[in-house]
Length: 235
Image 1 (cartoon, rainbow, N blue to C red):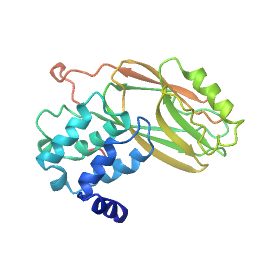
Image 2 (image 1 turned 180 degrees about the vertical axis):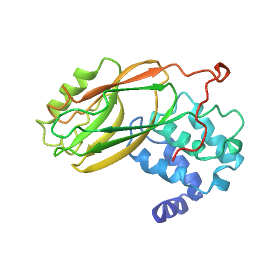
Image 3 (image 1 turned 90 degrees about the horizontal axis):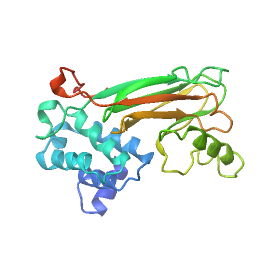
Image 4 (image 1 turned 180 degrees about the horizontal axis):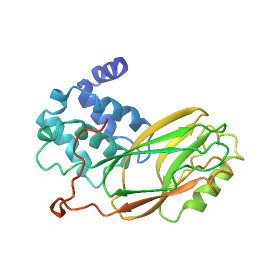
């Protein structure tokens, strides 16, 4: 927060305006989004709910040109507000928490498949009780082998480990960087709008062939269908 305040002052902005401006400049896949999202989701609710701020966040979420990581950050901020404090026109915010663990000495994830509605705000946690490092990437449909072999090739380069064996490809949609043995990490993302099967995979060299799974995205249920989307602020 001290660094944010200093940067905001240098730009003649309030800390909240500066953070939102920085959010809008995030790349499509950007690990800075986790920190930005944590800050916005924990921001003072009275300030976050001001009409000009809340409407700005909604515009970020709804703009088709918004990068995926920025949309996730803005949606986390709106989800942190009670439903009655969200701006008019905010659709129901569905949330889902998924936990996946590496199988010790098994070179596999313990969850090989999960289903999520399109547009859902997802918090995914990767636990690693294994003796090896693992990551988790969610990729475009049909790209499992391509991304896996790209990770293998990165194992032969000097900076592969520095890049956490994450291939530079538009087919990489969501990135959970390397998780050390005995540790866990969480990340947030918004499920794609296009229903399809999206592979998730560990691209640490040679792991991908058995360490992978499927995220099945289905069409979002219409509110009129009787479904009850989650609208409470996520934990």
